[in-house]
Image 1 (tube, rainbow, N blue to C red):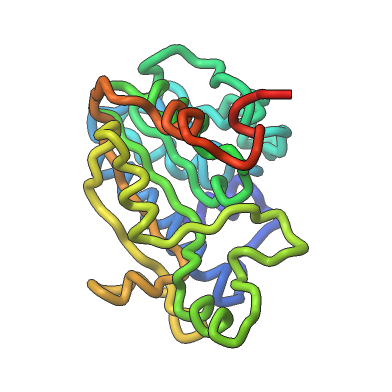
Image 2 (image 1 turned 135 degrees about the vertical axis):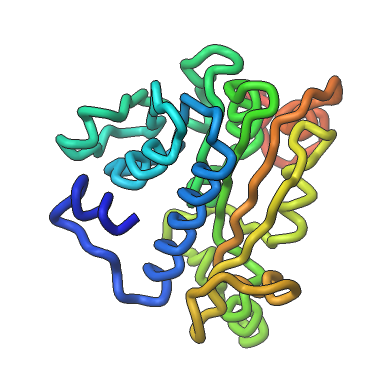
Length: 247
C-alpha cells in the first residue's frame, strides 16, 4: 500500500509511531481481503475515505474495477484521487445513503464508527447498499486493548475514549463481534487483531486478539426478516431522545 500513499498523496509518508504502523498494517490487511474476496467484484464504497489514497489502493485490488466511491462529510480527495474515485457528501449519522439497494460488492468502514453517536442507522445502510453476499470490512479501536486495560486499572481514561477528543464510542472486540451479527444480517467470516501496544504493531495470534489495539472484521451480507440495529435501539427504553426523534 505504500506505493499508493506515495502516488496519490505525495506530501504524506508512512508514520513512525506505533499507532501509525498499526493502522498501516490494518490497511494492508483490508487490501488483501479485497483482493481475495473481490475476484468477481466491480464496485466498492469506503466510508470516511479522507484523502482517498487507500481507497485507490483498495479499488485496484478488484478484478475489474468499475466504480469506487467515498462517503464523507467533506471532500478531501487529492487531485489524482479525484480522477478515479467518486465522492458523495453524506452525514453518516442522519442521512440515508445516496445509492440504491445492492449497489456495492464491497463496503469498507475503517476507523469511523468510534466518531459516531448513531452507529445503528449507518450499519443498516451499509447492509442495504451491499449486494446479496457482498462483503463488509470494518475496523474500530479496541477498548479492551492491553494498554487500555492498564489505564483503566490506574483510573485513567483509555486512549480510545479520550474525553477531549473526537471519539464518542468505545468497542470491545468480542462484544462488538456479537453486535455486528445481530439478528443474522451479517455472517462473521474473519476477525483479526493488530497491535499489542507498546510492544508490536503486528497481527496477533489467537487469544491475544482480545488485547489488540485494532480489530478488523470481515462480514458477509445475509438476508433476515428480523429487525435491523436502528429498529432494535428505537424499540428500547432509553434515557435520551437522540434515537427517537422526540422533542
